[in-house]
Length: 338
Image (cartoon, rainbow, N blue to C red; front, side, top):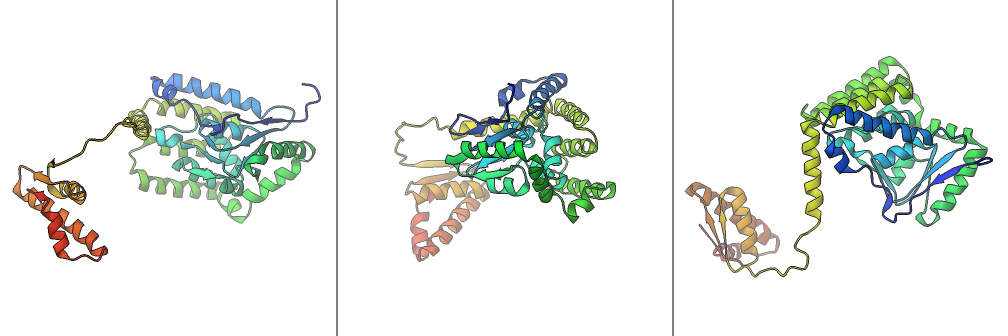
């Protein structure tokens, strides 16, 4: 539109800005080339948001995850409400950010800070996001749209002020030593690689590949960096590690939705634990603590003895804190037989 001075992107959802990509779509990809195609398409769409002739401000509230964060990074400016949070959690699904996240975040806030966020997939709260330079400004939730309007006007009139502010957050002697020269950068990536190996033991390919993508892309143009990212996503999205991590994620989501809502629980009058030992003893102790008689069963007598001993130790510790003596422990242990 002719004469347009700026644009603001907001979400009408109360829960948050953008929750991220459809996990099912990621799960269904069964060949690397399809993964690369999806990445390139996402990159192409998001790239357009940063190429308008006027400033685009992304107004973030609530959760902004994965592809949502990559969309925000593609915009020229970002403002967040105090209840907002951003994250690039793709590494937890055995992949990496594939819509530009591995290339834009290091260029925005420094390689060192971006590595911490991308390689861990951790959530960054609004205050930290502003401090790191991920967002340009914070505001209260109820004033987000008005604050975004003010920001887009300021950005349109004085863009250099924001560029200088970002530089002050990511510059300094440390950045000069670690990121602005090849030797320092090599040291930075070497340390990050060693720390990553300690955490993963080399069993997960995604963190290692993400590190490689950032290292290769940061010294090249954004276009070349995005292509490196797309190729890496294609390679990772079909790995057994990714498919298994997505399966675990789906199971955890299902576990949060209780299938027993509205169901009246049956009264448990007695119980048996098949398989004793330390774990079986712990289960027996929980039942006995609720005054439910329980029998410990195992093919090995030694395991039954171990289970009884484990249950006694737990009772002793808990009842001692309540100021009770061993007679109280003995009374509870009468409920457990083996």
